Length: 109
Image 1 (cartoon, rainbow, N blue to C red):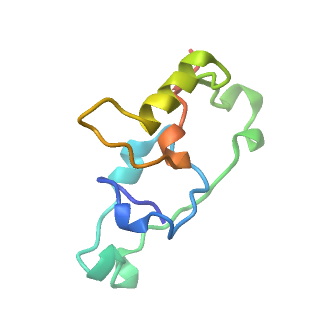
Image 2 (image 1 turned 90 degrees about the vertical axis):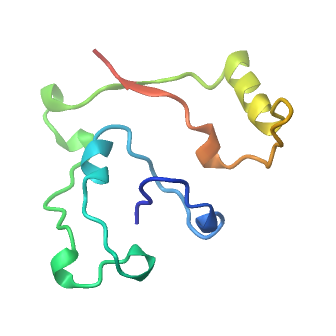
C-alpha cells in the first residue's frame, strides 16, 4: 500500500510506515489509479504487476546506487525538530510522527 498525492491524514495511526521511496517516485506516481471505492482496484485487469524486486546488496557493486543522508546527530537537526514541535505563530503545533522527521537524501555523484 502506497499513498500517492496529498497526505492521507485519515490513515494516521492506522498504518505503520515501513519505508519510503527515495528515488523513482515518478514511476510510482505514474501508476494508474482506480475509480472504485477507496481507490482499490476493482478488477484484476487494473492490477499493476511488480516483475521483480532486488535489494541494492544483491546488485553487482558497480551497479549499486549510493546515497548521502543528512546527518541527524547535530544541533541544526535538533532545531528543525524543535521548530516542527513548536512552530512560529500563527501555526499551531500538532505533534510529530516519524514521517515528519525524515532526513534529506540525495544520490552520491
